[in-house]
Amino acid sequence: MSAVYDVTIVSIFNRGNWLAGELSQMGYKVAIIDLSHLMGRWTPSDWEGPFGIFKTTSLTESQIFFLFEGEPIVDSSKGYVIWSKQGPIEFMGPLFQHQIEKG
Image (cartoon, rainbow, N blue to C red; front, side, top):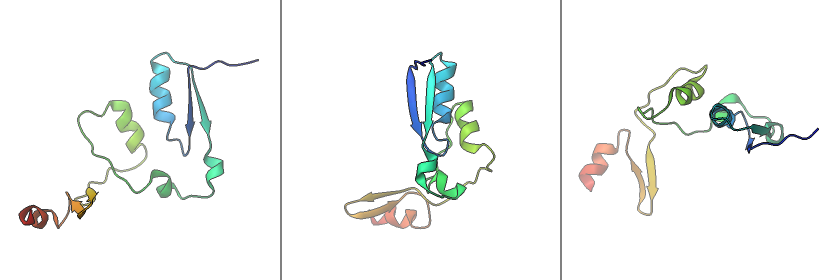
């Protein structure tokens, strides 16, 4: 027996599940290959990575559900930084006003 899929998603730590669900609802036949077992032992907080997200009105209901499933939403006043050739530019946090005034 062979299966034919429209889309194959290679994923770790369930990161591809949201995309697979969305594509499936659109009528695509989706396969997920989960390679989490090849990544060694990681804590759940490491699965997510160190990067937050911006909760905007453009997020769909399913994106919000997937991103915040089982986790409380934590607002942070720090964390958005661009690292330019001249050094870091912090957009959220205590140095923001100083950097704007410094120009």
